[in-house]
Image (cartoon, rainbow, N blue to C red; front, side, top):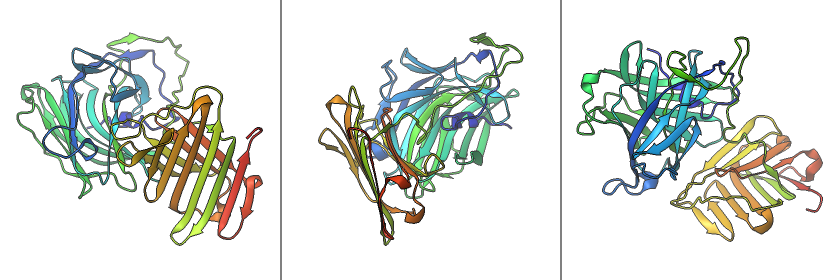
Length: 425
C-alpha cells in the first residue's frame, strides 16, 4: 500500500516543482497533549521533563515551518490550508507540520515521547503523524522515523516508517515500513503515538494505543536511528493529506495552462542573506589527526544587534556550522543544539567540546563576533580554497566568510592563512 512520508521530508528538501492547484484540502486534526522524558528533558522516569497541554496560543516550544496551526480549547490544531508539496507518487500533498524547539541528542540517554491525538479516523487519502527528524554531521543526510495513521482506498492503517534522505543528490530511501490495519471499532479512546529511544543500542521503536493509553500495541521492529553522524533530533507533529478538489476551498486562481513552481525554504546551510564580516581570518593547520580550522569574523552591521536567541539549557536556539567550496557543494555541516554544552560568554554564548567549538557575541550598534574551531577536519590544504564558512542561528541570524587565492596571507605545506577586510574594517 502506498505511503505518505515524503511529505514530511519536504521540511528539508528544496527546489522541486509542485503541480499547480487552485485548491487546498480541508482538514483539521487535533493533538491534546505532548509529553517526553529522558535525554535532554532530564532523568528518565518519575516526573515528566517536557509536557505541553497546548493551552498557550503562542506555542513557545514549537514552530510551524509549513501550513497552518493554531491552539484553542486545549488542543493543537494541524489544519488547512496546508502547503502544496510533491508526494512520492507525483500527486501534491497539502502539508502542515509543527516542529519542536527542544531537541534530543545521541549520547544524551534514553527517552520516551508521546503525542496524544483526538480519536479521528482520517478520511480517505488523509494522514496525521508523530515523527522524529534527525540532523547534524558532515553531509545533508537526514532520517525521518515516525508513526502515523492514514486511510487509503477504504483501508485504515497505523504505520511505522523510517526514511533516509540525502540532499546532496537529492534522493530518499525507505529503510523500513511496518503496518497494522485498524477499524473504527478498534478505537475506543484517544490515539497515543509513542516512540522510545535506546541510546546504548542506537535504536528507536514506536507503539500506539487506541483506547486512551490504557493498553499499548507494539507490533513493529526497532529501527536504527541517528546514524552516520546524525546526532540531534526534533519532534514533528503534522498532517499531509493529498490535495483534493472534491472537498476543498478555493484559495488561488490559475488558468488550465499555467504552472506553479514551489521553492522550499532553505534548509540547513542554504541561507543566502548571511552577513559578511568586515574583518575575518581563516587559519588552517595540518595536524596528526587531520586539519585544525580556526575562523574568526568581526561584523559591524547597522542597526540592532543580531538575535542570538538562547542556546543554554532550557533554551530553544541551536547553531549550524557549515562549510562549502566557494558556492559549490557542502562538505561540512554540524548542528550544535541547545542544552548543557552551552555556557554564557560576555554578551554572548560559547560551545566547547571535541572536535568543535563556537563562540558568538553581539553588542549595541549591530556589532557581532563569531569564532569557530574545528579539529580533525578532512580538508587537504592544497585544495582548500575557495572556501566559505557559515554559521546559522535558529533565530535567523547568519554570519559568513568566503576566501579565495587572492585572500591568502600564508601558504606553507602545513599551514594556510587567508584574511579579508572591507572598507572601514
